[in-house]
Amino acid sequence: MGLDTYLRLMIALVIVLALIVALGWIARRFGWGARFVAKSSERRLAVLEVLPMDGKRRLVLLRRDDTEHLVLLGVGRDLVIENGIAPGANPPAFRTLLEKTNA
Image (cartoon, rainbow, N blue to C red; front, side, top):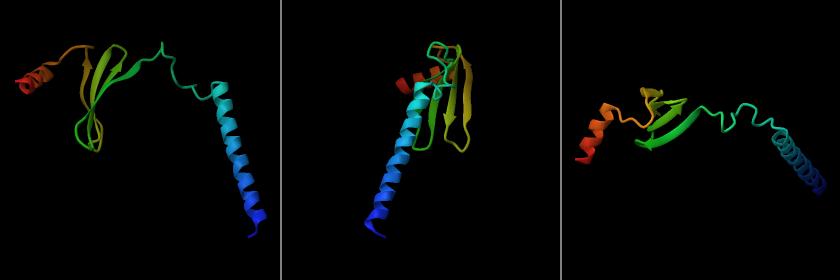
C-alpha cells in the first residue's frame, strides 16, 4: 500500500467526520434533538437526591408532579421503597431511623 492509499483514507475519514458534525449541527439548529424533551416550565419529573449505598446500589428520591418516590436502584432489579411521599415530609420510618442515627 502506497502513500496515496493512506492519503485517500485520511481524506475520506475527514469528510465522514465533517458530515457527522454538520448533521449534528443541523439537528440542533432545527430542534430535532429536543423533540421529546419537555421545556423547563413544563417538566414534571425531577431527581431530587441520590444516595450511594455501596458500589452497586443507590437510593434515588424522585419527584413526579407533586409526589415524591423513593427508589432503590442496582439490586438486580429496581425496587420502589416508598411512593406517594408528600414533598418535604419525613415519613415515620425515616424519622425513627434519623433519630437512631443522631442519638
